[in-house]
Amino acid sequence: MPQNTPQPAPRGHLKVVVIGGGQAGLATGFYLRRAGLTPGEDFVILDSAAEPGGAWAHMWPTLRTFSPTQHSSLPGWMMPAWTGDNGYPPGAHVVDYLTRYEQRYQLAVQRPVRVRAVERDRGALVVRTDKGDWTADHVISATGTWSRPFVPTYPGPFAGQQAHTAQYRRAADFAGQRVLIVGGGNSAAQILAEVSTVADTTWVTQREPRFLPDDVDGRALFEIATARRRAHDTGTTSAGVAGLGDIVMVYSVRQARDRGVLHARRMFTGLDADGVHWADGSRLSVDAIIWCTGFRPALSHLTPLALRGTDGLIPTEETQALKEPRLHLVGYGDWTGPASATLIGVGRTARDLVKSLT
Ligand code: FAD
Image (cartoon, rainbow, N blue to C red; front, side, top):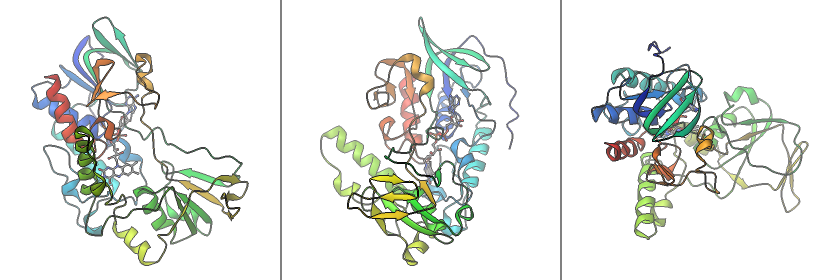
């Protein structure tokens, strides 16, 4: 649904500029409003996409969230229930929810506005965009990871078709082919589940895939992330909880298990023109490789601030950049807050972030 918010000219100075209007930006906007800040006057949310929904608007149509709606909700307003598919809604339901969420709380997201750079300008930060500049006391970056799909580098040429999760649309595109699916997370498991119904699939993962019990949903991932963080803060370990698993047994994945396709080989060591090979000399010919190998944080607009560590991330204390206290990061991954990159987890990170500003 197009956003009909009028696009005011950039104004002089705001308290807060939020970059990114996906779930992380919206949850932050919710708490900024609750703290008494007025959208458009005290803060603005800028989003480069033409439509609401963040990354959810680009995911493949049959994707199911890894938690039912009551565990996939942002602060303030619960995601409307989804009764099909054992309660796990598709991405389109999340897009609809996020669209209505920003309308409900009148967050007045400005789109499409692409932030090109954030720079220091005396006592403030200046946010340079394709629609002009904003300055602010605080900048909150919530640009997600979708625009930076990650594919690991392996030696050798491969002449067949390659796609990343971000490009995958439907199983029918691979019908009748020999398809290699790479990755041990929920995306890989769900894509394997459906591609295996129309193609000859092989699954490769770095380590043995870890499946959650059937009656445990993605809320457990939030609990795992919280336990890990607590363990990190107290110098203990959370191995017992982390050992629970990674992959949620949504309906399609359970069906794949029943068909006997959820078996993974370890990673190959190199690519050939028509397949892959392993260190022991074994080979596999495939027509296509689907890389379900994750994403990296979209942080290039922050390059002028020179904040990145050797791991490519920006070191933070909670959400606050260590070397630029006026900058906060929300979403992206557990490094900005436990489960900060999930629907259920980002609310807590956003709440604590806004509390630290006001
Ligand atoms: P995004 O949704 O990516 O939003 C970022 C926004 O920032 C976008 O609208 C983008 O247009 C904008 N932006 C980017 N760069 C700029 C810029 N320079 N200037 C202005 N705007 C910019 N989580 C769950 O809780 N449950 C699930 O079931 C689940 N399934 C997932 C399945 C997949 C395949 C993936 C990849 C992730 C899944 N996640 C899930 C994780 C997470 O909830 C999503 O990735 C979610 O989209 C993250 O929200 P976000 O707001 O951090 O980022």
